View (cartoon, rainbow, N blue to C red):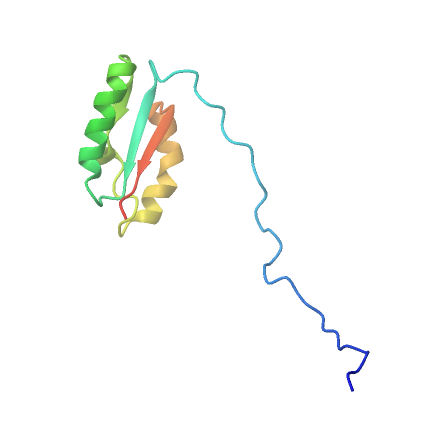
Length: 106
């Protein structure tokens, strides 16, 4: 007949403890008017066309917005990706960047 004693096994959660702590997001800008926006792109899927359309729409809404074009920063997913990304904080500071639009094509 059936045993009343059932076997028990220890079970472990398959995920490791969190390695990164949650940090607060940067404060949102009140407006984009008068702000400098950097464009980052991985040189895939028509980002040049997408940025042109974004600029047109944003300039209509925020006439004093200024853009620093993606060509200034280099490919964010190319052979020099690590160097490009590592240089961004200092370059943003030097250029007075207030916000970033980062585009990637899949």
